[in-house]
Length: 465
Image (cartoon, rainbow, N blue to C red; front, side):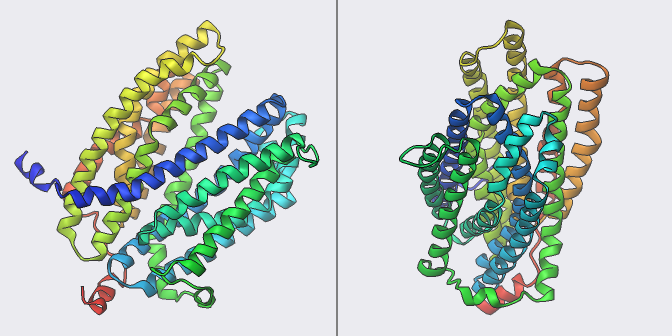
């Protein structure tokens, strides 16, 4: 116990640094949830068909963002470590490669959406009216991919070089632009045509266009810390640098893609258990997101801070930070579980539900209170500390083993074969959270999670660190 206590950081400047990164991320996530809520409310007033169509079309868009976040996950490790080593040139190379890879993914998704919008909607639903509305939505959304994908990567990478407020500023601007544009074009206000679901897509396109402009004007014209300019994007990353990215980034992309696919399978399992279970789970997921928004900020901060520290060559300090973040994740897990327990029943009262669904939702909410505790721990450790330490290959193996060989088989068997209660099925589907929460402390103690990216030590020596 004394050893553990000796590893905990008590320096107030460390916690100020955590807050400086965490708070903008938390506010940004809260704003994004607010945008989604306003979209839902506006389209919901036009009927279930258009609301369902936009929701399903956005599931496809979420699949796109998984690839962007996979690219970002590997790039943020490189960027944070090179920034910690004082090598701005390689940080700029990281930005350069990230933007080029993101643009390739964006173009592929844009072309698929342009050529096959009806086929894409058919994957999610067989209702012809919903498909027709979804096609109208996707026909405009096709232009969003390149704008949003590149600006998302750029603003997120700026956090690794000490500019976490850019993402928050961009989200604030996008929030107001999106609400105003949606109101004008969905309902046909101020002389604009009434476009309904197509208006929602156009509002999103306008908001993402503004995001793109604000992000890159700031990075290329205003920011002086990194000094990234358009001329730097003309340089092609070297083959050696690309190999360095693949070593760390490829496992992140595979891991995030498999986790995203696994999340869809969770929805499929719950969907085959009946409409009441789907409704109950949807309510629980809203509460889950509300109560864990802070944890996303902590995870982001832990990844960046750990990466910076390793870039400076301070392995022991990185170990201390890892233990500190582990204890912080436990604390946030307890708080989140309490919030789900308290907020859950209040949320249920907002909805008009059948008595059977209300009881089912209460049972599942209790299960979520348990799940969210472990969710906080594993999220901060796997997506934060260990990823920031470059332990991406080991994390990929863990994600595959724990989710695909334990959680999904157990949950699918319980829900589809043995007709277990919904709350028990959900725990089975998320048992990988529990396993990883325990496993993380063993990995943390081993110290094997600390991996310097290729070239970091050389960069540190050149910078005299």
